[in-house]
Every structure is written in C-alpha cells, then in structure tokens.
Length: 333
Image (cartoon, rainbow, N blue to C red; front, side, top):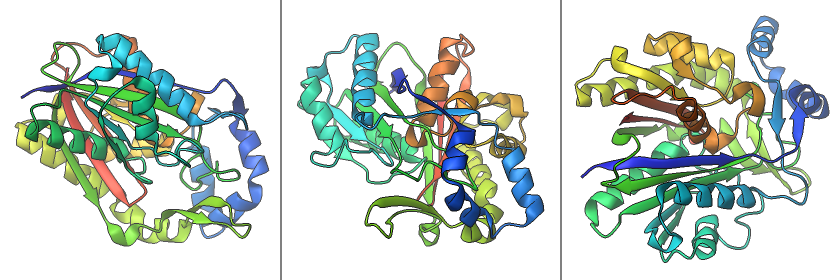
C-alpha cells in the first residue's frame, strides 16, 4: 500500500504585526524568560532569531476559518468531495476558540459533509504533524475502507503569549494536508519516527495565569539545562533510524523541511544532520514566524509551489515541540 501526500494548503490571517511590536508589548514576559540565561547567550539568541513579522488573527477571527479554507483548497486540488473523506485528524496545538464547544475535527467534518472518523489531539505541539501522519498511516493500513485522510491544524496563542522566547515568536495560521491511498500524485510517505520524553513535558506548557486565562509558559531554565543538551541529538537519532530502514544516507535527502523557529535553530539542525543550512527549508520564518503545528505544511507547500521539488527526490520533515516530542517523516516525490 502506498499513501501519498496528495495535496497541501495553508491560510494566513490578513493582519500583520512586526516582531518588534510583539516584543515591546510582551517585554515583562520576555525579560522573565531570558533572565535565567547568561548575557552572551541572550545576545546570541536574539541576534539569531531571523524573524521580522507575524500574521495575527483579529479579535473577532478564529483559526478555524483558516483551517476550513485550507481544507476546501486541498480537496479541490485532489478532486475529492467532502463526503469522500474517511478520516479527519486535528493536530492543532492552541486552536483559539475553534474547539471550545465542538472539537475542531468534528466541526470540520460537519462543514465538509464528511461522514468521517474524527480524531483530535490536544496540545500536540510542533511535532503534531508526525503524530498525525503516523496515526493516519496506521489506521489506513489496517482498514482498507479508509482511502482519504484529512490532517488539519490551526493555531493562535492566548493573549499575551505570542512570545515563546527563548525559542521563537508565534504567528497564526491554518493548514491542511490530504493523504490518499494509491493516489497518482504527491510524495509517497515512506516512514515516520516519533519520540516523546515525558519528563520534559513542562518545558513548554499550557497553563492558567493569575487571572484564570490560558497562558503558554516556557521554562527557560529547564530548557537550557535539560532540553538543549539532547535537542539536536534526538533529531539525529530519529533521522538516522528512518534512513537506516530505507537503506539511505543523509546525502540522499534533497530537502529537509523544518519548523520555523529561528535561524539559530535551522543552523543547529543542519550541523546535527551534517547538511548545509541551505538544504534546510524554513521558508516561512521571516514573514510568518512560528505557526506552531502548521510550519511543516506551510514550508512544504511554498517549496512545492516554487518547483524546487523534482521527481524522485527524497524529503525529510523534521520538528519538535511540547511534550516534549520529536518527529521525523521520510517521503519521496
């Protein structure tokens, strides 16, 4: 059985906010996060961000509208009707108001007219794409009736939590990826590897603030002391494992499609994998910031639309986030 990434799409809100404005507005939060770091490290971190602006939802706008538009786009690209979707998986990290009353996957299934199995992953983090792909492939391989799977994400942080420093700055987005069994177009999904270290679950956490409102907390001290010493090590470990099973080396990878965290993170991943930074695709970083779960779909879509992906090329998708979870997905165009 071959399952292909038949179509992808993303949508962004129209409003733009400079990163400098975000940092000025959330300065107390940023100062608290960076206070535990040494001055030289703080300076290197800020210099290596590489972000200029982010897209933000208005107060009357929720990510669900972006997700719905992206989902309709991928179905149109593939020529598949909503009622022919067999599986819908929402792997959003912080979906704003979209899932307050009705889980996003269920709401989307209704709006698309799909009588589909609907799954929702809570706070799946930046590695949610890999978790969703792995779940979809497992279900499609064990149930021959499942032919088309729609994977979606839409994220917008709680007010006051747009800064995730010392990691990145978050923008808003919605995305969709359509997986189709025995499709004729799109990269074949070859393998997925995911790893979670539960003892690091509190490095990035969704919590309640003093006013009772949701807030994303980043524990910079635990990040520096416990996460960073192993962060790139596990990317190397997971990538090595999927390549070993495929009988490939890293030099066979034409593109490494990575999350939009920072230039420093991109360069660190390149060193860990032994590839040039130019081969690591973080196309949306400067203009859109980190869109949590949508980064990989966004970057793949932009890469594909430029014509940079040729027939027979190997693609490696990489990301890590809350959980703390790492994920690597191998595909061939």
